[in-house]
Image (cartoon, rainbow, N blue to C red; front, top):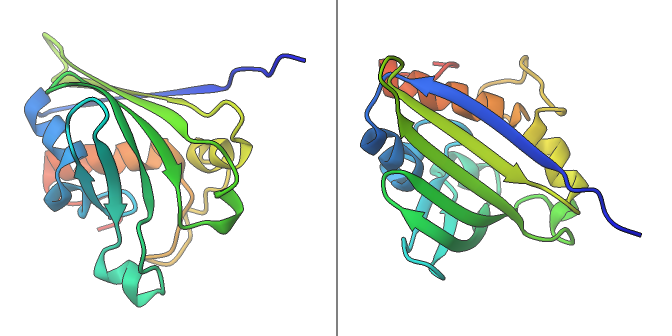
Length: 169
């Protein structure tokens, strides 16, 4: 039996340069400001590793090891980044395979930068539910996992780059 391919695509337009968007995705001083606020580290070369380390808030909540990790498959700054991706902080997801995440960053003539995030979550139903926003709880207390998935992360990224503050700030 052939498995059905599951791919999720999210897109956002941001009033920022492609380089600013790239930096916000790949530099820990930015990734600590939006989304789930981990500290991303990338070895930006094909075959390089990436991981997201916990911020102090995660450490205080008991998460002391890497939150997610994977491998860099393709890198073309500031236009494209393709990585494997697996959330490590949820024991229920450890058995699932690595997924493939693609960031396409394109400058537009009229709308700033278009960021398209394509996440191939084939064979990883737990990851698919999490990143789709199916577990969203917009009433979660600050610092709690709202489960808003990519739509929430990209909204927060846009807000941080355009206003300096996240959507929950």
